[in-house]
Amino acid sequence: MKILVLNGPNINMLGIREPQHYGNETYEDLKNLILENANGCEIEFYQSNHEGDLVDAIQKSYFEKVDGIIFNPAAYTHTSIALLDALKSTKIPCVEVHISKVEERDSFRQISYVREACLKTITGKGLNGYVEALEFLKEYLK
Ligand code: DQA
Image 1 (spheres, rainbow, N blue to C red):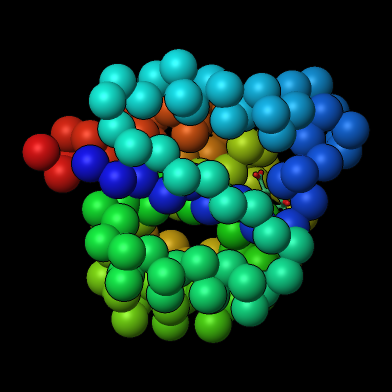
Image 2: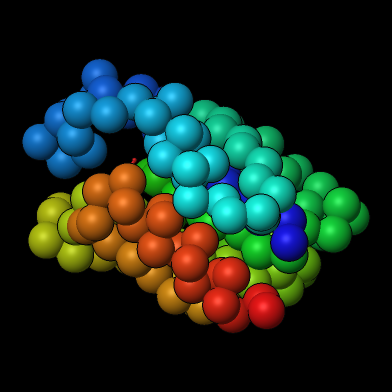
C-alpha cells in the first residue's frame, strides 16, 4: 500500500511557527512519527509552499498509483479550488488533516474547499492526527 503524505505552505516551519497552534515538533519529527507507524506501508512525503506544485503532486500520485493521500493543504485549504479539482480528478482516497483545531480559530479558516473530496477530516490532534489518518486509510484500503 502506497500512501502520500502531502503538506502545504509553512508546514516545513513546524517547530518554529506559532507553537501555541502547531506545537514544538518539527517537520522532520512529523516524518519520523509517520514512518514509525507505517507498518509495512510505503510512505512518500512531499511539502510545498506553492499551490501548483501541490496540484502536480496530486496528479503525479494518480500516474504512480498511489493508494491514498493524507493531506494538510494548510492555508490553501481555505482558498484553493485547484486543489479540490485535482483531488476530484484523481479520485484517490484522501484524508484532510489539520494540526490545529481550525473550527475554533478565525472565521476565514472555517471554509475548506478540499473537504468535499475527502473521506474524512481530522483537526486539533497535533501531529497524531496524521497517524490517525494513516490508520483510517489502512483500514479503508484493505
Ligand atoms: C493548518 C490550519 C490552516 O488554517 C493554516 O493556514 C495552516 C495549518 C493546520 O494544520 O492546523 O497553515 O492547516
